[in-house]
Amino acid sequence: MLLVGLSLVVRLFFIFPGPLESKIGALTNQADLRNYYWPAQTALAGANPYVLWSSGASGEFRADMAPLELLVYVATVRVWNDPRAIQVLFALFDAINIALLGLLLRQSPLKLPFQVFYALGPLTLYNLTLVAEDKTIVLTLTFLIFYLLTLPAETAWHVGSLRVRAWALAIPVAAVLASFKWLSVFYLLPLLLFVSSDWRGFIKNGLVFSSIVALAHLPWFPDWSYVYLFRAQRVAVPLHIAPARLLSAVGWYDKNLVLIVLAASLLLIYALYWFKRIDIFETMALAVMVGVLWTPDMDPVHLSLVVLGLLLIVNWTSARRQVVIWIMSALVAAVYAISTHTNFARVGLPNLQLLTGAYGSTQMILLSYVLFVVVFGLYLFDKRRGRAVGRAVLVDETER
Image 1 (cartoon, helix red, strand yellow):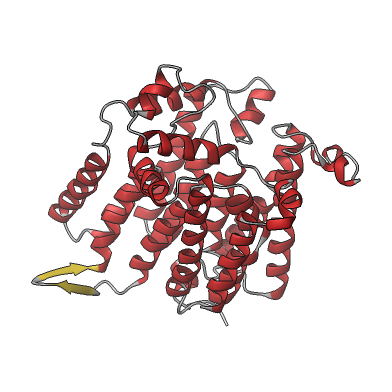
Image 2: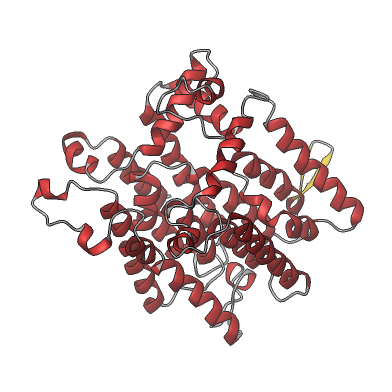
């Protein structure tokens, strides 16, 4: 609990820096925060942000989110109508995530290293706090799914006369995640196979998932459809640090080819799971990895989600591995910060973008992947050597 409290204090300091506001503000990036706050306060005022956005009446503001996410922000600004209220919400979810990691990794040597890394590491402090991001909520739902699946298959709770299996609860949580950001769709098929004892259970769980997603999309129906139309149009030109952008730089990008590669990559992962070459935890982490990497508008925050997922299935508790991961995470956070800011001269620093490149440049993109390459490399190395990965890491079956 001390670590949870400390992490919350650190995040609140970044949100409310007081006399250090100018110095902290020089590092922040609130580009996405305004697109969380504007739709929420617009809806709170009784207007429809989706209609205003799609009609062009919102100017530079967007309502680029699923209705469930918008409902969360509306409820938040109803309490305090200020952008910082949403930042506080993210900070609270970060605190929940550290507590959830304690539950998820309760039997794992990863517990303390991961909690400290999440609470105080540069990867999360920059990508999820100084850059105000909704991915903290995505991680909460992801960690909860992982936790439920680490419980024994027979684990169940009684709610009145109803007996609810822990594994079965993973499906509603995955549905909420899909209603929020769709990430769980990448591993939905293997997840349904894992939690279902027979084909009837498979169909029932599929219907539960579909029903929750459908219900979550009832608010503002059908005006939110512009969100998906907007995102579909964005695949035409790669953005941010997506690998597709590197392909585009050499004239190899084709959106249909990228979709084919994504589908083939997911099918390969599903096949590895079906033939028991990887477990459900590896499957989830790897499916999110390829799903995110082949998204044409992937940014550094999405890449941090991939890295955090991979860190759950790799044993990085040795001192050497921890040092490497901390150094590489500091490097990628610095690359992200430097490449998106040009005001370092104000504090007497040279033009650091000479080292990192401007945001979206080939140099910056390549530097952004060093942590991912290290962590994914550790996974492949341990997998090839027969060392503990996936469930064996999470439930303390690691090699001693």
